[in-house]
Image (cartoon, rainbow, N blue to C red; front, side, top):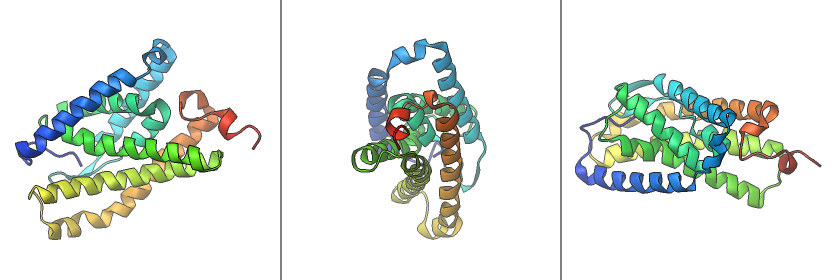
Length: 221
């Protein structure tokens, strides 16, 4: 669902680039860079970024801007925190755009819609669950991985649809017929893939998941 070049006017692109630049600067400042001094952690971050990049290359679509692919952003956010997840997303977008699967002028729009929304939702649900729900392994996996991934994918795709409708690029009738019926399937696909990945990681490699703690979620339960 990358928005290609030539669909949006400067009135949409300029605010997106301003917000994109601000978020990138904040992410660069907030990222815990000492973590990547360890070659093992650096390799995990780069490897996870590469896996997400490959997921973005497997896609289908009908009309311009109305494509389907797994995002994987929820897993990045839970593993590395929002700042490193945002920087991973930038590497993914640079690679996929250079490959011809997006437009350079719409890179900021794509980053905000397909990265900013999932990161914000995943981080928000994680904080809410930590504040108000029992610190339980199943709450973490089912809510913060399965549900957060599916919902973030759904909201990101609806945001793309809303943007294209507001910009006059697509007509609602065509979108409702060609695109919207597939969203429940994409919700389930995103939820299952991210949920299974995070379940395996917290079970086998919990040290790779910065948002998970054995002391918090397992001990004494």
